[in-house]
Image (cartoon, rainbow, N blue to C red):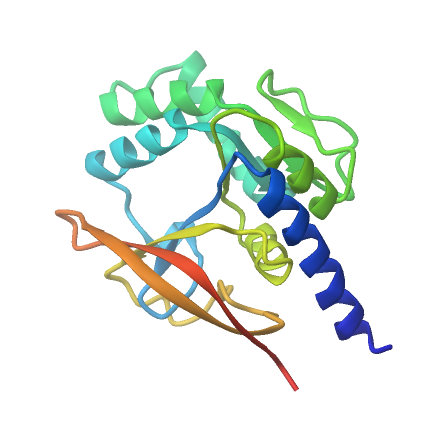
Length: 210
């Protein structure tokens, strides 16, 4: 049996079990440029965007990060200890500090953020377990995890915040995707900065790459 066929069958089994028992939604929320790259240095978050993501975190029970994104997010710990004086940033820092985080890493041996913990299972097992427990919904905010979870068909909703910037190069969000996926647009949200969040649900229509 080909590796891809085995992967597809495993993903189908995971999803079949989750549909029977799932009570928590997994949402992928990430910023990206007009040309499809994930580069936090290419965008300039303003007060409105900080408030948007603070509200998103308040509604979440857990957020999933890979090592690189987690270490970037540690910046917000410094603002809790030494506020910047900019209310939207300081408020976001407090919410981020309090939101439970699960970090997936092959290199980190421990994390010392009070609200963070290293995953002790692989991504599919950890997410499957989280989705079967009652609680607030789950967020994933790392490009690498979004790609893996998309290939596992475990993401229920995508919130893609597209900024009016062309980066020219960088890390593509939809890199190394196993096949073609069709999405349904649920709604949009436009910010004063010109950024637009596109809310998508993946449909059941998926075609494997040949």
